[in-house]
Amino acid sequence: MKDDLPKGLAAGDAAAYQQTYDLYGPALFGAALRILASAPDAEDALQDVFVSLVRNRDRLAQVGNMKAYLFASLRHAAGRILRRRQHTAATELEAAISTAALSSDDRCQSDRLWALAAGLPAVQLEVLALRIQGELTFKEIADICGISLNTAASRYRYALEKLKLMVERKT
Image (cartoon, rainbow, N blue to C red; front, side):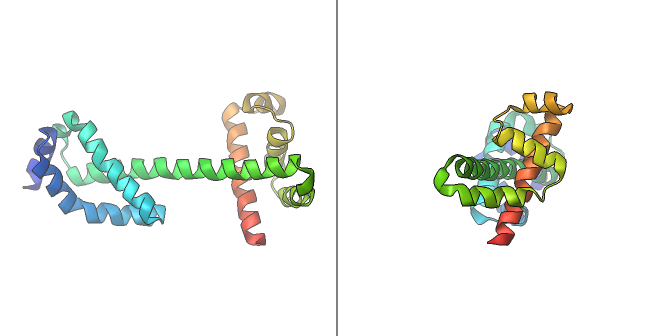
């Protein structure tokens, strides 16, 4: 029964998709909920897994362990959601810092954010200041600091993440 699922999925058999969902859906959703800590995001991840099954059905006939395949697919879907979440949070924090830095009405807010930022590791604070105050690209920051492009971007991301935690602790 379970052994026939890959072939049925590969053939586009609706009953095989239903059976796969019935067998693995609750466990997949539970794992996604634990990973993402959000029911809507867990639902999105589960949907991504089943959309992926339809899109990649030509490869499914060779799947030996459907359960492992589905959980690997879930891991990738959850990772995409987490990366999107991190990107959104970083973008929102960057916008808040930039707005505070540019608006004369929010000078106090800007000063408080930069005072908190002073508690960051020096290499992260440097990249944060160059990116926000200097409006430099990561390539320019990498060249100035003598680091790789990836290092510049990761230091910036880590700085934003730590600054966000600092702000949350203060409120």
